[in-house]
Image (cartoon, rainbow, N blue to C red):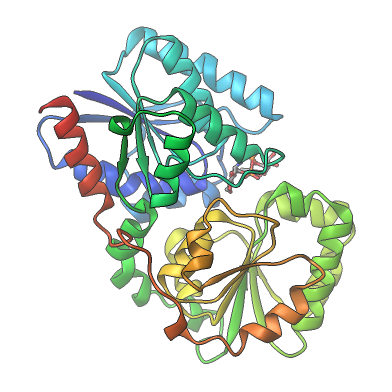
Length: 362
Ligand code: UD1
């Protein structure tokens, strides 16, 4: 079976790495990797391929940045053209980025079957671009692989047939389990001189935070105040860097004691997370990674498509006004109070491939 596997943006790379590895171990599946180019900087894309041992994509669209419609449309046209010469038996999309949705629509209209890995997550916030991507992708996907029971429940409620849904677990955790030894060996913390420092790791990139002048200003103020008592390490996403400069906030951050870094590779970033006592983020993946590592996580959002990270005891949703107090409160949270959800065990790719074999009888 010829299977197209689509990647576009940073979190996708982490999700396809284990899947490619397990598919390659079989003789019945022929995975063909396609990179839309939604993310293109070396430290947002290339370094992930190197570190995660992902092969070079067979096809690269090099779409780059643009408005949502520009990006989506360009990916749809590029994928439709590719499918004229290279028709797959199945297209696998992962996560919730624009590339996920764009390829799904193009494939479905060509009559190609789609499988969505990380299906069923819902924030119920339709102002969030990823929520639109999730709803649209799931609504036309033929196979829905969910990371947690809530995902399967949402899909059933939306009218999907039970036979199309398989609960497979969290694919991102596969990568962490596989890479754990290598991550621990890296000298990132030592090189930054924070080996013996108690610090929080910060990431921000969501438009609802970083494109909103008032919110990002309040977040920066809270982080700068907190950094007088607590060390903070902040790798800055390119979108965030641009916005901080545009709003005149960057210089103040640079003059504070917060350690500002460029976007990090997967290994380097996880090494920093491993050594942290708390995460402050608006990322979806980091909420999950912190939960798995039993690290308290403060999420600067009104909602999450990953509520399981809250019930697990790791994650707490907070507003920019609550940030400072929440950081203080987190100092007392005990790791023993956090549980790891079922099927977040490093075996998700195996379950996906077993499910494929069953469905296609190969
Ligand atoms: C995208 C995803 C988001 C995911 C995030 C991870 C969508 C709608 N959003 O958001 O779900 O959590 O990736 O990072 O698909 N840029 C660069 N270099 C790059 C990539 C981006 O400079 O390699 C800058 C560009 O100015 C670009 C901006 O960042 O316009 C935003 O990039 P984009 O891919 O549109 O969205 P992200 O914010 O990265």
